[in-house]
Image (tube, rainbow, N blue to C red):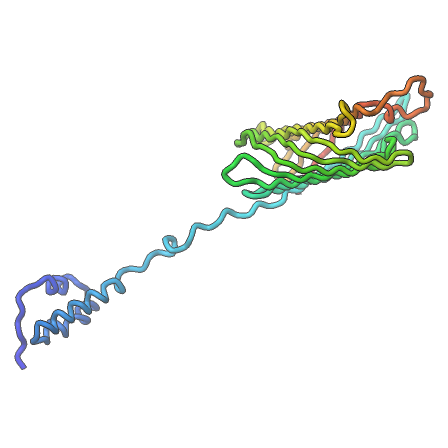
Length: 298
């Protein structure tokens, strides 16, 4: 059988510029075909193979964008010990533990502390508190909801322990690398127990949370919360806290922490003519405390 010669066509031009594997694929259809229909079928078969012979897409193009790495809990342990001697002998101990977590949807904050102090061998302070706050963030909105619980124990108060619970909504006013400012509004209450006291109080909560990152080695935190009494008009509590942290050594995660706190209760009434040995803390509306401690980032 004599080979039939075809004039140059687009298919022939493709054959001339193709690689050896492509030539071996279409050569039987072009060089040994005597029927134009067979040639057309060969060109169609070639067209069906071309997509298969194109280079595959890279793995970077096919793989979806990986999600951001999950945030980790940040832990901090602190210890402070102060002592003085002379006309009076005084010593105070402060220990604390903090934990924080934040991602795109949730924010957790836990803090606790124990303080004990003596003066001339007499115990003058012995208290503990634990506070847990959970915030549910609303993506693409500055609003969030929160739930907060706190437990207080103080040997030198007229009550032995107090359990507080509150919930509501909050608003993120602005947040950047240096500033994080939020306000909260909600409802709650506290349950107070002691030898001669058993009170449950419904409360409103108005709070401000401010975090200021001054530099890579210095940070400032301020929190204040007002608790108006919904049962007794004009009565309220206020809890305020300031923390100033200065990093000492980045490698060892060591910091110096100065903490100030104050609790105000308008319902406490001072008593006149107290005996000299009476515990004045039980009758003062303000309960102010401060500590200087060494903190370890775990």
